Image (cartoon, rainbow, N blue to C red; front, top):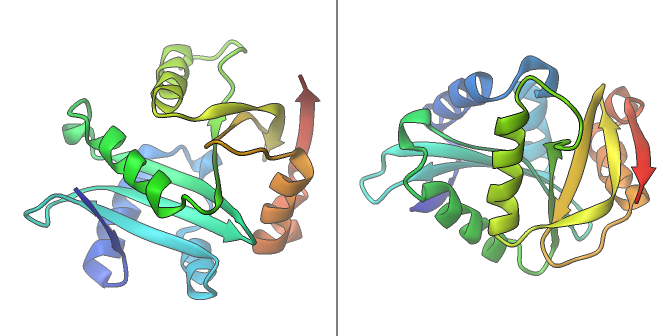
Length: 180
């Protein structure tokens, strides 16, 4: 498995298709905005490929100072359950080992139609070494847990990434839900 910077149109089309399929519209930023953020050097859009250069998934990160948000991570549905996600996730942690690497997941402690899926997602990240941060956020109407890789992160630092990379049009819709 390998991570490839998506700079050609073929990679970007495959990534955008999976992005649109894997994430609900309420959770997606516009793809053009992600590309603009990447073009400013504040994001990476990565294709996941096997040794035969077959597309298997995507990873999109946002970066500010020493913070790296794994904004989106998805494996093709036909490739799930084969350990690809764990292998690539470990590669991502190594790639950003000198940064504070974190991600958001939908809260698992509140009732939801996809409760089992949320718990399974959290178990995957915990199994792969992520830990809970001591705050939840309301991100554009969705309550999220923050998980990080062997680092500390507070709400103000989290918010600063969004505010500095995506401006008020997104950061105005982020709030601290509660601290443990």
